[in-house]
Length: 92
Image (cartoon, rainbow, N blue to C red):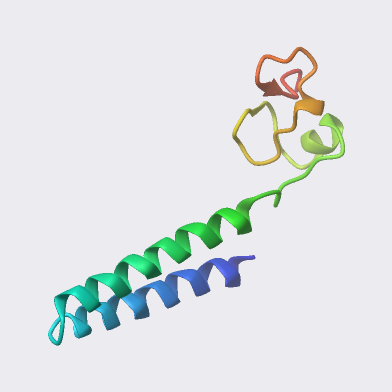
């Protein structure tokens, strides 16, 4: 997991450097490379982070050191939110 995240950083850095180098030839080409690179990294990081944390139940979450899990946070599922207030496993 950490290697995957680090590769995004390294590839992003290389592509941005290439973009700045290409700006000497053509500013439009350089900004295009930088923009496309950042967009791809943003999209891929969203796919990567989607569903990477999953708990069978709140006891499972608690055993892994998690307390209340808020809507939008990794690991949140409506099935874990007993009262539907957007906070799962709040009894921990």
